[in-house]
Image 1 (cartoon, protein in one colour):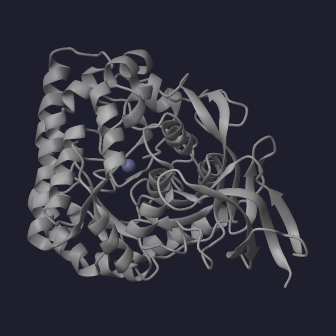
Image 2 (cartoon, rainbow, N blue to C red; image 1 turned 120 degrees about the vertical axis):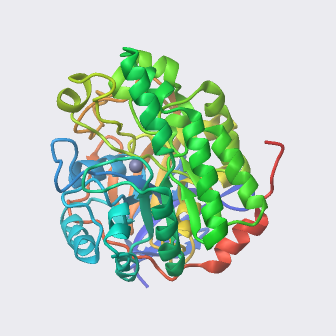
Length: 480
Ligand SMILES: [Zn+2]
């Protein structure tokens, strides 16, 4: 048999902890067809040499806001997915809110899917949308409709986001939880208590605070804590799979850990910025360009969220990638009126790889939090998130030794609005090649290779319940 691609000299994770083997990966019809020790006599159309590098199952960013169609002055599906490819992300899962219109019913969902299919450089799945307005208008059938159309989860906001995506009140959250529970999908919640955030934003505004860290002081840790406590209670009451998106606090990780230990189906993700920078330093230096919601926290949170990833309290990493126009929406406004959001998809994988190089997590854990766990959580496994025979041939190839510095003006960056509060962070480990379904989509030095529209829509597969169950049984609380 002639293969389409051989990725030769591939060092892949195998076994436990930091164990690896060197193998040759055979690819046929965009899927992994086998692994062989020796490629003598094996014929292939293309051969990609991964010598000296680590090969991971394709990494997934399950929390993006590409803002397109509707806000192309911030980002487009093309520029966002080029950054994904540059950053070693082979599948993105986009949020339903930040397009015009928001994707909140099956027609909007399908329309977004078609639009993205024409523009995306990597594979993609989509969150479904549901809001407080859908509860009030008694149209919660939108949940099942979008689940049937292939949505992988549902996003709910407890605080205001965009006007076309109204937040929920507490009882509306409960009503949505009941509807989502019936689908078996996860309900991902922006977990901040609205009344507290609203009160303290107004209070600090009235006091005349205009410094950067004022934003973090107003959106206080307690607002996230009580929101997560409510979510866990709602999960217990309804059986819904409750997922905390972009969790910023270590107290959140402790609450999720306790929920897991009680047998509840509660999970969380954190973002690269919550692991690396803190409000006091970054919001003083970068002001509105470090404004996000929830806000940056403290160095203690940075360290304890790494521990949470290592011990399973935090299930995986995602970016909450949400760039804004620098002059119009960031630097031209004060800290209260600037829009909350930062780009991040280009450097998510490398920040985690750097943490691995620093000994914060094992290789086995790195694979879980960059790829496997999100694929399982969103029902894409083992098509995505795995290097099994029959899985899509999605591979992220990493040069573990390369040292470099995050720079908004990096010549290899595909950012449309070039700002990042991660500026100047030194990293060890850099994405060398990104392969989606056996096709090279990015190579360091060459840049983006894939065409816009190469990316496929990936609907939720039949969820691998056994994998999810195993993961919970394997969960071992530590002293965290
Ligand atoms: Zn988000």
